[in-house]
Length: 256
Image (cartoon, rainbow, N blue to C red; front, side, top):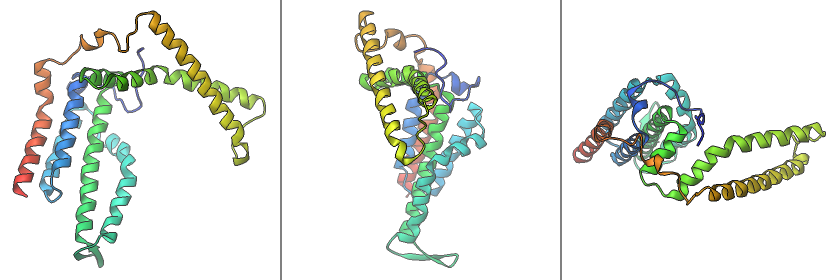
């Protein structure tokens, strides 16, 4: 894992959230999301409380609302689906601005939009404050299955290599007069994809054999588990938001 593998969502800053070890941030995000999902859709006040928590973490992490809102557009397809629910839902109907809408559909749409938006914002905050390498390190420290972390590690390590290889192959193909942009030129594109797969497979075999010769035994060195691991104080600090979210969820379940 060389340095410099930062993803496009990461925003470098000297904030308390950035300084937290990755495993505590991952655990906090998962617990927060579970609390949001477990909240009854009728507890509107609870989602306001979750929004306040997200805003507080964003302010602490120095992540602006504009950045969050622009990146959260990824959930737009789900929002469009939710908009159709009030019109397609069955059951009791209500009049809203002269339109006959389903009560269950309205609640369902609110449920999707509110919980989906909060989940996306929580994930964006995690991505904005944690590099890709640290995310994998955090998953490894949380005892995520080794096969998953190893695949992610190698993908991150060699993604730039494969992208560079694909770029060189495309330049070579274009220099020979083959620039597949239309449907009848897909054969050349498919051949290029196949050649890239074979080159990647062969390169992977060579890298794997080289790693075995250097003592690789199926997991990264123990140093990943050592320096930088979260202390009890950091776990307690990161637990503030998920504990508050779980409290809100429990109160919503009891009061609803």
